[in-house]
Each structure stands twice: as C-alpha cells, then as structure tokens.
Amino acid sequence: RMFDLGFEPQVRSIVGQIRPDRQTLLFSATMPWKVEKLAREILSDPIRVTVGEVGMANEDITQVVNVISSDTEKLPWLLEKLPGMIDEGDVLVFASKKATVDEIEAQLTLKSFKVAALHGDKDQASRMDTLQKFKSGIYHVLIATDVAARGLDIKSLKTVVNYDIAKDMDMHVHRIGRT
Image (cartoon, rainbow, N blue to C red):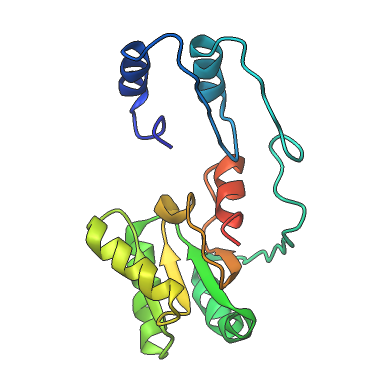
C-alpha cells in the first residue's frame, strides 16, 4: 500500500541506511510486481513462503456475485439484503469514493441501521474511534473506502460487500480477507 501512495523512494532510502547484515522479513497477502521487484533488489538469499495459491483468495471464504444492472439499483439492493446479512454478523461495505461512503452511511442511518463511515478524510483519532465502536458492537455496518481493506482484524465481521468493484484483484483479495 505504501507503494500505491508513492512512498517507494522513502522505503528505498530507509533500506539504504540500515546495516547490510540485517535480517529482513516481508509479509503480504499479495505481492504486487513493484514490491516483488524491490524485494529482489534489497534481499540477499530470500526465501519465499507461499500459503495457498498466488493471487488467489482464501478458499475458506465463500464468494457470491450479484450483478446489479445499474448504479441506481445498488442502494435498494443493499437496503433489502442488509438485514439478513446483519443476522449473520457484522457487515463491511466497500465503496470506491469517499462521497459514496458518506451517501450510503446517510441513507442507512435514515433507515435506522447502526452504521458508521470510514475513509481518508476522517482524522486518525476519528477512524480509531469508529473502528473501536464497530468492534464493540455499537455499529453493525461499516461503510469504507479501501483505507479499511488491509490490516483490520474484526472477529464479528461475517460479510463484506463490494458496493463498487475493487480496482484490481489484489485489492479484492485484501477486501474480502477482512472476514
């Protein structure tokens, strides 16, 4: 993700300033080409451990595809299906744009869902507070951009909805991996 945000020069700078006899460990659910290229350049005698198939989602995750024919039908579909999803556990809904996240949150709030939004326009303290409340059960639905696609471990999360399709397969794997 740091590469996506343009931090490659900083990563290379840090690596260039640490001892050459270091031990380096690199963990990732996915290995994009740019990260693999960097790893080959900076690691000596690397050992790669792969769990499952490369580029594939965890086989323990059940994926269901619902093709919605137009953007205007997405919200009504979500409103219809959400109660059943919540009966199974908490729900994380991914949208591509911050404005879409805020709009979905507003619409679900009007329908009395216990919902919160998470995206990059919210400060870190607010994001942490929202996550804590989601984990503790105050909220049952979290609407988020890809800022929530990596690193979250929420035990009560049972369903991930891709309201908007992920930008690539790696991001899809990270999104659904939250379950």
